[in-house]
Length: 517
Image (cartoon, rainbow, N blue to C red; front, side):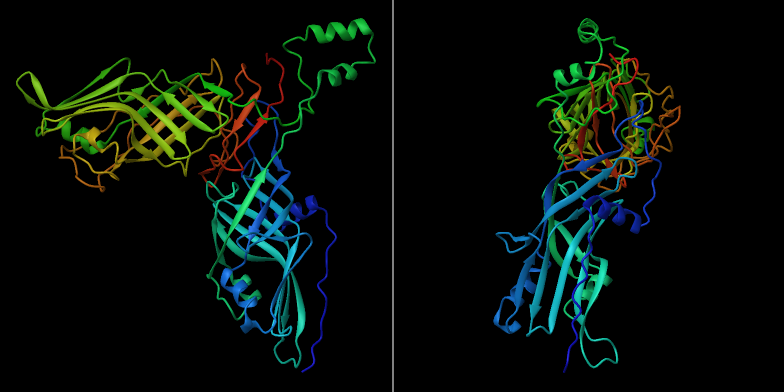
């Protein structure tokens, strides 16, 4: 049987053009790009280091390199290399993260050529590109496969461009080199037909993307910029720069010194704990009451302060005030006595948590003392980190009881029980006004005993009404432009996914605007 071979057509494209083509080809549109809240700022992060490791499928490679493939081979092109695990490493061509659309796109150099059965199997993959849309990512490639068209008597090499091979779920470690599971697409299945159907689990991909900040302009560069002025005028200008003088608009991104932290100047927490628990205390069965202290009132805890750690991308915040739940009076005391104080928000690589100091006396008479215990795990999937006038407000975060926090409710609820949603407002600018709305009074509802287990009713909980307009999408960024620091931390979200500690969590130097000091 004769075969006709058409060599793969290669495209001469610059890396940036390839990235742009990938974005346009997917029909991507901006959700409403945030202006970084406080004047002009960077609109994207450009990655200059990294790479992609992907082995297609380990069993496929083993077959090709075994005796059953009749001389099968795996050949690398364009600088691609094999890793210790047998996967293929493709170098980074270009990469960018759009701070407005929260879309990550990157392309990679090199290719891989699979052959077996004296050329009857012939698959070439090259021009790999990776894009994300929301919480889903796609790896595409240009393909050249030997096929026999229907009705044809001979096979030929068929070239296709930008074929979506596999999809994957965007996770916290997606850009930090962690294993990211992949699944074969319908188009990808055609490339590997008849070996694997659509949906087949393929090899995990390992993606690393980093951005190296350019060095900050040297003092001599600033001096030379004004060399056309007289020597005395130049010296005077450099000796006493007015606080209102804007910095050069060409200031480039730069990471802060190691160990830098950014202050959270103020904050307020609104949390009703659990509606059914409040209803139970207010009913005749418990004959209880709720006492607030330290300035707290109506489940609103103000006076928050804390910091954002630029090295770990962690957030720690504590709020003032306390609350005490009392039930089942017995003489001058109560059989049920639960106190929460030092409530706080903690976000790190382990997740997001509401923490508190707890003193809990349950119905069994035993007292438990807990310090800075993570009481509730918070779901940030739908959180909006877009700042408004220097304040980031996280509204109605779903909360579930943690295993460590279960004793805080005196044994009434088990780990996993749904708690009231949590609303937090954090001021990253000194003097920024927190939202003026007030939390609604927690509903008392019909008195009922707490539900044991994870199916408790969370209720609506306190609601904080945010006034003012918000620029950007619901997939926003956590931005700080405090007057005491020139750095803007951006905790980027894609479809509400917080990429803490990942490659898309970046630090960018803000362009100073008039009035900064």
